[in-house]
Image (cartoon, rainbow, N blue to C red; front, side, top):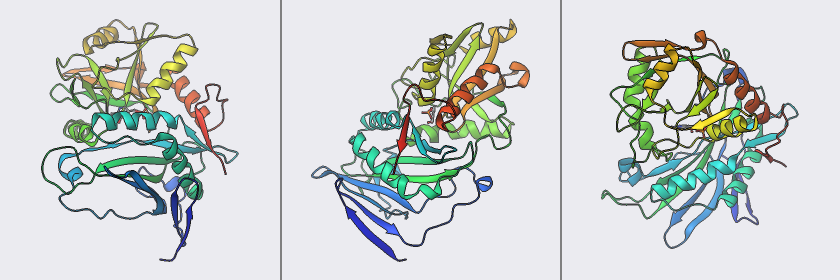
Length: 365
Ligand SMILES: Cc1ncc(COP(=O)(O)O)c(C=O)c1O
């Protein structure tokens, strides 16, 4: 493989460019997280040097000792955000500062050294510019961005690692709702929890996702797309749905569980809350129990339920199964509230609607 090396530059960022570039598939052939662009960003941490050796180089496998701490004890954090291309062709990030703030918050919780968010943002923009031909163009498609930090000491004792690797990889992804924006069926887990109070649920760390697999696979076998997670103490209060935050529209109140330490503070959740306040919708961040939802369904005041997250933006819920009870929501149709948030947020992301809140960070040449 022939490579052109240039760089150094103001940021001390070294760029090693691949000469023979890969080819992005047609937008209609894109799925989620299966193919990766030509290059990745990396830097390393040691106690002596801090974060150092920032570099963009061809995407490649990691060369790690089988004793690498990350592989045994999961001391790692990650993020998920997207770059969108507008109809005019400009490249746009949506609230990326929030992702890097959350990455540092997760790092603090996992005893990982924080990164300089402004520096990393500049490196990310440089990487995206280099990979601009990998960004798909049709509405709903995007370039998924996965910043990750892993512990790299080759050591089998349980402690915080001394050394780390930070990397960012990019993956062109298809439209989440390729076959139409449609409601999902969800299953309330009565036996498994995703996270516990005082644990690491509010951090984006691999263990939370490993802990979710058993109940998720079980729900899928029973024909349900996602698990509705209850709290880990009483199995009573609603926390999240799959890897999304959750909203309930009951009477005229839009309710989402308050951030209690075991819920991931979603950026889409925050965006929905900001918009609902702006639109004058009565909004509450509070405890909401599964019994309250059942009662609201029974008396007809439960109007809508939807999940929020970067992947789907808004995911309407059409059915909830709890024990032997099945609740049909909005007659299995998409509710007007879910649709309004979906259209507004995606409209801003793809440049169809004015960004009055300054949520867009452009990636300019
Ligand atoms: C567990 C979990 N909850 C909620 C979310 C939604 O967060 P965001 O809106 O920042 O994508 C995610 C996705 O990042 C997640 O993994």
